[in-house]
Amino acid sequence: MCGIVGYIGTRNAQGVLLKGLSRLEYRGYDSAGVAIIESRKLNLVKRQGKLRILADVLKDDPSKGTIGIGHTRWATHGVPSDTNAHPHLDCTGKIAVVHNGIIENYLDLKKILLKEGHKFVSETDTEIISHLIEKYYKGNLETAVSRTVKLLKGSYAIAAVHSLEPDKVVGARCDSPLIVGLGEGENFMASDVPAVLDFTKEVIYLDNHEIIVLTRSGVTIKDYDGRTISKKSSTIKWDIKQAEKSGYEHFMLKEIYEQGDIVSNMLDERLRAGKISFEELAIKASAFKRFKKIAIVACGTAYHAGLTGKYILEEYVRIPCWVDTSSEFRYRNPIVDKDTLFIVISQSGETADSLAALREAKRRGAVTLGICNAVGSSIARESDGVIYTHAGPEIAVASTKAYTAQLAILYLLTFYLGKLRGAISPPKMKKLIAEFKRAPELMNELISEYKDPYNNIAAYASEFKRYYYEKHNKSYFLYLGRNINYPNALEGALKLKEISYISAEGYPAGEMKHGPIALIDENPWVVCIATQAKTYDKMLSNIQEIKARSGIVIALVTEGDKEIQHHNVNYVIEIPKIDELFSPLLVVIPLQLLAYYVAKKFGYDIDQPRNLAKSVTVE
Ligand code: M6R
Image: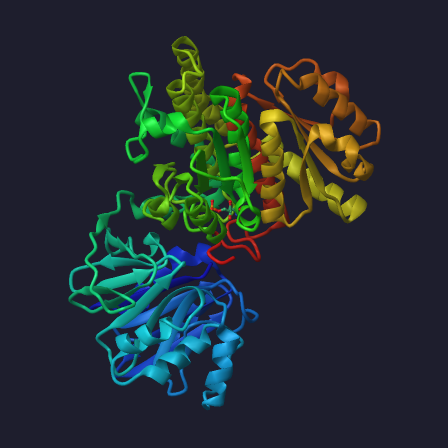
């Protein structure tokens, strides 16, 4: 959701802000803007549409200032337009503000400000912030921001500048991420690390209710009562090159291709002499021994990883486990207590609902464990313990590599807990690990088959498009899976709808007769995950039932499957043979590629699909 950047230094601020915003565009891309101070005047330029539109405008009339703020927007209040784009100004035109989050009491505050004579031009909640700063401004921006933030309810990360104070950028955060980048004679603030990585690797993660002042020579951090806070900086270990396309047409494809190596590196890092190690984990082994239940919460793709986690944790640790979407968890009255291990899974570590669920679980006394990709993120910092997936920056909005990395961590965690609690014997453990170690190579084998642009999935996507347009002018997908691959049915459907805008539903195959079968005629395409020995015959029966009603079937089967040819399926995708426990790691790859190639055939913006943002930091 929205990306903000602030800069002060000696470089051309316009260049720094545009670079930073380009690294944050995954957070929102319906409009963008910058406000740069030049000769004690604000130079404000903002445009509806992608960042490149703003960049083109700025190219024609570049600003020379060395201090400024910038924003890339994901609209919450007010349609995407030039006027609603950030930064927002006060009545004097001297104060500019960028904001990520939602100000829940903005209408009440706006009423007061209107009565006091302030003039509003946009429909946004953000604009009240610039007017409040104006109201409290008595020659010191920091003081005015500090008075303003105390009145705000909701979530925000803000950056503000005043044209008459060209020596400082002021920021504050509450429930929306904000980091500081430390340079030599220059400093930065941003919603996320990639925005500053072209310039510095030294960052400070801000916590809630902190106000920062950036000057050229330093950074001060205070709490809302004005007390100075001293914080250590961290050095970012990954390189900005990892957040680049490196010759790929889309980040999504690059990230799909990275999956085998990510799991391989993870096993190298986490397995030492047959032992599983989670070095960063602050929860003691003794604590893991006493839990009576496990609760998992997450959103979207991370939720699907959590669902798979339930299957494996219950099977190998023999502890009851339930899984909830974070938004549902936080508004019910769940039975979570000190006997609960509460696991929150999040790529970004900033998802608002997951963060709120984590806080609720802590309040109820659970021991909390975050499984996060983004190092230093809010969920990582607020959980009692964290395990990082180390999948590298995921830029495409549709999550792929973060998912397989989350699955891989869940396998390791399961085996770790199973061993610790005596549910997995040493010989069994040895066998499990040996089979797990085969997975990355098989993932890479599968991926390399699909590096040929004329692969069968690309061809199926082509046929789908032709079929979709020529015959029915409308079609949709149903994804069926069973047991440990049921979550993959949900994930396949989610990937497709996110980037191709085609209706898709994931279902446990056994439930087909309880409703979805009514949809089957010659129109929908049904993706059947039929790789598992345990439920293979049942899935074949499902396939027969679909074919008997003229449905079009894509069957995912295990390599060498001779049976499927007798079932009249329309398309077949083969998955390398592995113990079915680990099959989700492989099965999901063709599902991701199917979504990718369908979206590509339709010519959609794969990495930045409409209406979505990578990190959902508002409720
Ligand atoms: O950063 P998180 O893992 O917490 O994000 C959760 C979801 O927003 C995310 O998985 C979303 O569903 C993706 N766009 C899926 O591709």
